Length: 336
Image: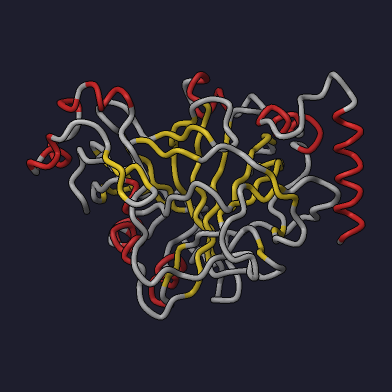
C-alpha cells in the first residue's frame, strides 16, 4: 500500500511540472481526473488506507431544512425513488469539491437478500445491508438528463446503511409509504418533510472518486462519487420492507446492488479527514446530529418565499443566521 501512495506522490510531482495540468490542491485538479478515470467502472471498495488525503473547502448545504411542496415515492421495479418538488428554490450544494452549484435531483436505494449484503460500495472490504444514493446535478445544465452528458454534470452521494438494533427515525417516514407501492410502477405521496430529516449532512470526512455508471439501457455516464464516513442505520424490520417490493415480473425484488469493481490505479481521495481514523466509517451517533444547512441568499433576502411550515414560529422572524457551536444554523426554520 505504501508503494502505491509513493507512486501517487511521484506522479503529483510530475503533474505539477506540466503547465497543461491544473495545480495540485485545487478543485480544478480534482476535476481533471474525470477525463482519465471517469470511464472506469463503479462501485468500488473505499478505505482510509487506500486513499489519498486531499484538502477542499468546506461542503455547504443550502435549503435542506425547507419543506418541499410535495414528495413522491416510486417503485420503479428496480429500486425505490424519492423525488420532490419545491415551489421556489430547491436544496443545493456548494463548496467542497464543487466548482459550481449542484442541485438535488432524486434519491434511490440499493439492498440485498440478507443483512450481509445490499450496499453498492464496500468499505474496508465489507458489504452493508443497504445504501442510499442521493443524486445532484450542476445547476447550469438545468436538468439531470442534460447534466449526464457532461463529465462534470452529476454527483452521487452514497450513504452506507448499517444494521441497528432500533429503527432509524430518518427512514421511518419514507418506509411508511412502502405498503402503497409494493407493485412495480406504483407511486404515492409521503411527508412532505425537509430533506434534512433524511440526509445526514457533513462538511468533511468523505471519500471521492470518479467512476462510470452503466444503465440497463446500455448507456454509460461519468459520475463523481462521494462516500461519507457518516452513515445511516436500519433495523432488521426496516431492511425487510425493501425486500417486500416487487420487480417488473411480480416477484419480490430481493437484491438490486451492483457487482463490485476493481479500484485499479485510480485516485480515491479522502477529503478533509478530521475524526478518528481507526475505522473508515464513523460510529452511529447516539443522538441526532444538528442540521448544518443554511438558507440560500434568495430566501434570506425574501423570507416570505418560505413555505408556511417554515414560518410558524416567532423565532423564524430573526434576520440572518446565528452562530451556534461550529455550525451556521438556519434561524428562519422550524426545527423538526
